[in-house]
Figure 1 (cartoon, rainbow over the protein chains, first blue to last red):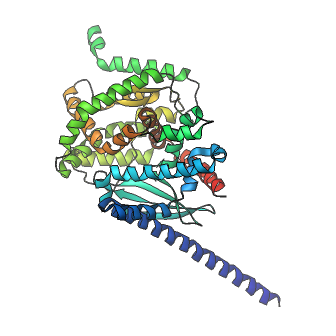
Figure 2 (cartoon, rainbow over the protein chains, first blue to last red):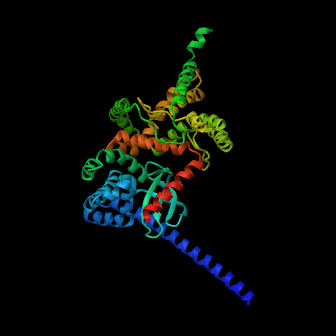
Figure 3 (tube, rainbow over the protein chains, first blue to last red):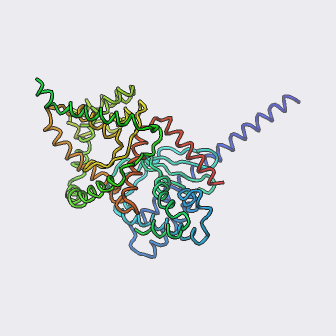
Amino acid sequence: MNLKNYWISKLIIILGVFFLNSANADIKIKASQQVSNFLNTIKEFASEKDSLIKIKRSDELLDMVDLEFMSKATIGKHWKKVNDNEKIIFKRKLFNKFIQFIDLHLEDFKEIKFQEKSIKLRGQKLVYVTGSIDTKKIKNLDITWKLSSKENKILDVEIEKISLIKTQKLEMRPLLKKNKNNFSQFIKIYFSN
Amino acid sequence: MFNRILNNKNIYKLFLAQLMLILLSSCAQNSANKEIHDPLESMNRSVFKFNQGLDKYVLKPINTEYEKLPENVKKGVSNHVKWASTPVTIVNSAIQLEAENFSTSSIKFLLNSLTLGFYDLDPETKYKTRDFGSSLANYNVSSGPYIVLPILGPRSLRHFSGNIIDQSVSNGPKNYSYNSTTLPMRILSNRNTYSNVIEDIYNAQDPYLKAKILYTENRFNSISSTKLLEQQKQDEQDEFEKLLD
């Protein structure tokens, strides 16, 4: 009887490890696919001239990023005090800024190539896809995509170890301090360019 | 004899660097803290504006022409600039007791000497760039205030004083002609490589602040120990997980 229990418990452990590994492998595969989809959509966006298809591509890009997370992470604890209307405006402007960034470097993004090097699970909720990017101008640029393992959405991008979220946060901090009671004014000034 | 000593520019450089080290040691700031103190902001902003003008009217037009050169030529210039600064990495890897970086950079420097650095004979082998500023950071000298220098751009005082020492390593007093050719090449090559970043800085809401943030982050990442960087990654992971709750 004891021997039977012993083997059953062993089997449960083996099965548990097997399912956990296959679940982790699934998260990694999905994250890798998401990154390549994202880059392909950027390439298509950059090469497209038809404005209607461009809008469609930018909507697809919007689906692949967690804009709510990005906004929360860049604004910090102040985000809780922002009203719903301001939140919507901020998120839209933040995304538009990203689209403008692609528009500014169209030639580079048309030829972007990503070489995946590793995929790692970080903690319970994050998965990092690391690799290098070649653009027309710069070769072998280190890049890390940070995704949520549950939603499989892009949370942050780190280029040459510099985090996009962190840079935005540091950039916004002094302006937020100046306009801490007037978020609409902050939005107006920050996105004035 | 006395005149010869006075004429030696390296003596002045060392004196200036020593003076800066004294200033640095008086700054009560932890080297692990990557926030750079900016007490000279108004002056720095003026110099930044001057650099911006210089870039707009001199460097950018030159870069537009440089851009038209074949990729191989630009790559060759970029390789040569990196090769020419390798002795600084070799010396500072030794100072920081980084044996692997010391041997890798030394071997690569000797190997690429065959092509004067214009062609990288071993592109797979990588090493970390080290300078005297990073050596000072390694021995816990504080970063000091943030400064913007004409032409050279953003630096911390520690980084700048390190640069002066590094100049003495890579260029002895007898080979200034060599320096006069590598410096313009370095400026051209860097302007070309980072042209996208420079455009992004100028398009920012506050270009001065953006340049300062990018410099600080990049410098912190390139001189910090693996342990410190891993700690930073862990803190960020904790913060992200909290936000995802």
